[in-house]
Length: 275
Ligand code: PAF
Image 1 (cartoon, rainbow, N blue to C red):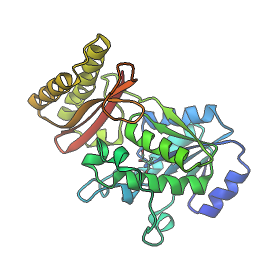
Image 2 (image 1 turned 60 degrees about the vertical axis):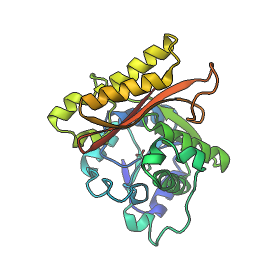
Image 3 (image 1 turned 120 degrees about the vertical axis):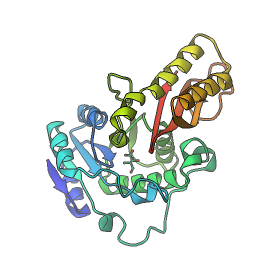
Image 4 (image 1 turned 180 degrees about the horizontal axis):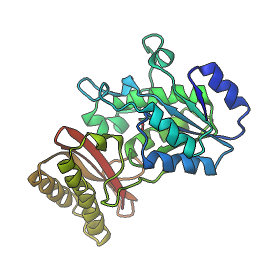
C-alpha cells in the first residue's frame, strides 16, 4: 500500500489506478471500516482510503482532541484488506488557511437528529468530504449506514451538486452482542461495554413492534427512552423516521428506519435499523 501525504502524489497515483473506489475515514479502523474496504475492492480496480480527523465536524467540547489516532495499526489493517492507496493528510495540508468556504446542507436535513444535537457537524462533514472527493476524484465513494443521516446528507450533496461520483452505502457491522462497531466504543469501560448493546436491543424491539403492525411510534419511542433511562442512559432521541429524508412518517407505506442517540457515561453512541 502506498501512503500519500501530498495531493500531488495521491493524484499522480489516482491517474493510473483505473476505476477507483474511495473510503474516507477518520482512522482507528474496526471491522466495519474493513468491510467497507472489501466491498470497495469488489467494485473497482483500486481502493483509496483516507484517514483524516476532521476538526471542522467536531463541536466545542466534543472529542476532537481525544479521538484515537492509530495510524500504524490502521495501515496494517488496510494493507491486509488489499487497499492500494492511503491518503493521510495532516491538518496543514487539508486546511492550510482558515476554511472560508463551506457546504451548507439545508436546515431541514441538518436541523434534525444528529444535527440538532451537534450543530455545525454536517457542515463540517459535507465540507471535508467535498474537498476529499475533489482531491481523490474517485468513481465510487462508500459510506456506512451506521451514520445514517451522514449518508443521506452526502448522497444529497453528490446529487444536488452533480458530483461525478456514485455513492454506495455499506451495512452496519455489529459485535455478536448486537453493538454496532464504532471507534467511540473504545471510550467505554468494561461495565459500559456490557450495557451498550441495550441500545440495539431497544431498536430491535421497536422494529419488531412496527413490523407487527403497531404504528403508535410515539408510545414505542417513549417506552424505549424510559427503559434506557432506568439503566443509566441519557437518550437524546429514539425515533422512527421515513428513510428517504428522515422526516416523521407521513404515509403507511413509507420505508422506515428507527434511529437512536444516547449517552452512556461520557460516551455518546448512535445506532439505527431499517424497519
Ligand atoms: O464517517 C466518518 O468517519 C467521517 O464523518 C468522514 C465521512 C470520514 C468525514 O470526516
